[in-house]
Length: 159
Image (cartoon, rainbow, N blue to C red; front, side, top):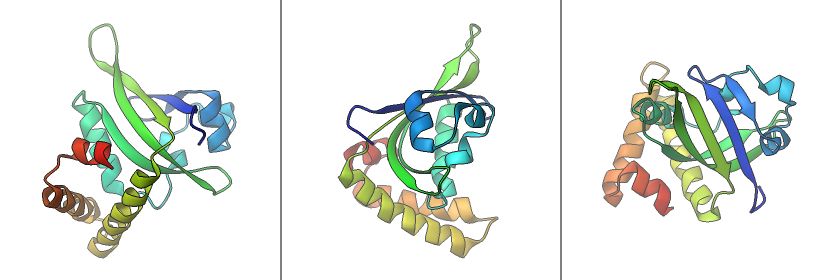
């Protein structure tokens, strides 16, 4: 990503894309019509641990914003890293109506750390098998946070 790029997308509460800016379209390699109405995980790279997305969904379901380093996959199979900020959007009654995500160029140091952490998490997911994958992967992340004495938000913002 370029320094001044901001990838913006919005989804409904089920994760279906309702808006994507031109930078999102450019980096994803999909056309606007291919993206709209499609699940946001269309750009999920297989190197991303499932536990990262569970954490993200859990935080935004609790009306909290979530920051994360994310490796995305473009339509042609190439990849790009982003530093994502995801927040819920609300209707007039205060109910969660969808999600708003802004992604920008990540710090190289953060990508380096995230790559290694995600490798360890994926390894744990594979060893644990599908039923226990997310719990095993989450435990790897919890162990790293405990070792460093940081919360998830502190860890992500520090790398």
